[in-house]
Image (cartoon, rainbow, N blue to C red; front, top):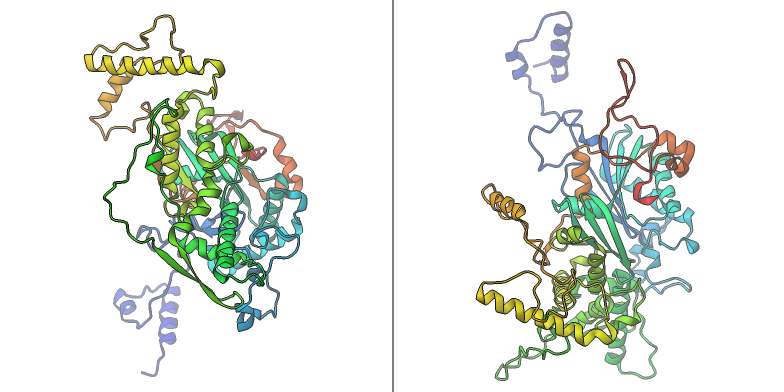
Length: 567
């Protein structure tokens, strides 16, 4: 009993060195505690049991937004951390005001000259008034917190897969890459666009990705993992937060009802909290639906019943402890849906009063689909992926899809908005075509493209497409091997859920898929973004190239790199 555990371990180790192998019985009887393997992977606990020694931890997956940065490891479904940017995250050493009760209950006022929510942003798309040094310091501080508090990695350099919005300015991109290469010694960084990764996380090769972010909403058409068209609008989370603040200020002024009291101006934190807790979007009114092609000649369908029992309108009480004096606002619950109605859809404004960068969301999606080629449109319209921070607002996704469906039924896919003096004749042709199709479907003798009036033939865009016998046969044979495919030729508007851009980046990094934009550290530190101009046209098809007899280019070797969609 005088020998210690450490002594037993030392004796057995010495015997193995001299050539005497210890018996299994002796090793099993040694009272040692369970030890953690030295090279255990950082993969999630929900991974496969045999993946404890995998090498997925050589990659770090990052997603960068205007108000957050997410980070984690490949193969995991959720990021390890989501770090935001705000005044509390930018405190200096020794600043303990957050534990002061008076400071906590005080309402923070916006600084003069600052825009709404500017303190909570990492960057803006307009770089004219942006301090790039401050952006670099904010991003570096967030990455140091992620590495030291959440990743807990050894000093070994790790490759980085970075998900970025495709409209990021080059100067901002250079600043982000400089921080990752200079301060965290990343050997290489793979850049991928967030819309493509969102479609990957949805299990789709082609999709229409609607990213409702903070500063803007982008609608991107993805065809076979390639971006084919993109439009954007400023109707996003920032405008929605402003409208919620206006509503609360108006309701508080009416609730206090004191003409001598100063005008209420709630802070950004209060508006953000109310929006995230009780904000919602109401569904599209059914009485506003119109029949196909004839919006002005069809009377609305009344959905209300005269003998329906009227119930009292629900109300909600919102406390405002930072108000002077502290108060509780009782507001109708239906009023909390007005900010989303005004900011994202603008139903009370004529369409000709909008600029191209401030279209309502359903018109923005419709114009994007209208700009796509016919075959790409047929794939994308039934695979609409709505993502972004604002997309989690209750009722928003259903409202967008219903508004888009009504817009398609009303206008069809005719790119001509107004026929001028020929509008009456055009409506008459469409009416005859509809009656002709209905009559011939009842008789069973429908002929494609035939009009009742032979003097007014239909254009090719308005005629029914001819059926392809081979395509019909292949679709019939495909039913034997699996479920029926999604109907894309009948004008189906359908939404698809996605796990987000970070989950798509995690899947891509785990599968070791190389992106077109892969930046090496040495080349970036030597040339910067100027080194990306050497080779703009990159083929994704692997090609065999031999330098000489028996000599070939190494796997993964690349002479230069390209900025891809960021060029």
